[in-house]
Image (tube, rainbow, N blue to C red; front, top):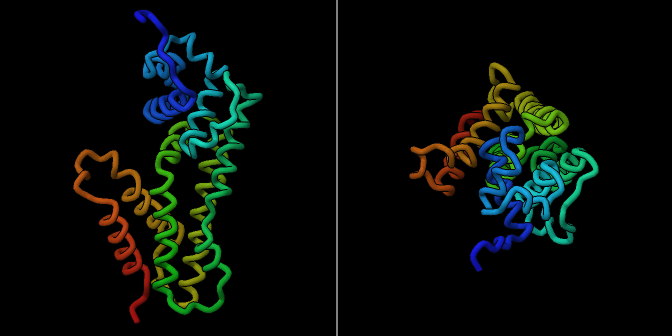
Length: 230
């Protein structure tokens, strides 16, 4: 019927919100931008979420896993922005790095190449698997102080520190090459993986690179660069 308001699910709203927030950031994006992307009126969107904070919450839940929207009552309400950080924290706690942790606790190394390669592959897999979530969180965390503190200061910087500790340990044991600066080397590993597993998708001249090619090449080159020659 002409003039009838289109029907959308909460999943539709969350998907549109995730795309808008990732493209424009939290402060610049508005309720009206998401409503426009859905073909809804500004007021109609409030039947799904009570606030812009709740809109980001459902966007993050959708990016982490659509099943997280199950059981949410509409309009979705938040008591505070802390719930967004709590959701992100639960996600990261479920996405640990067991290979890196095992390497840090291991005293005897059977194969440094295998150990280091597993760490690279684990990090690559995490970023490749979660690049949609990472893009949303990284974009919005710049503008939300509590999210910034959690994501950039605690989680991201914590990963760099763990990689640095691993490099120092294996450099001391003679399995990895000495480097001019360990924290920079840890960032080099993480950022190399991040570009090929995620950021290359936003490069207009990188469409010819496939996931399999990038994954294998990053593994080969990083292990070759950091392992000492026999």
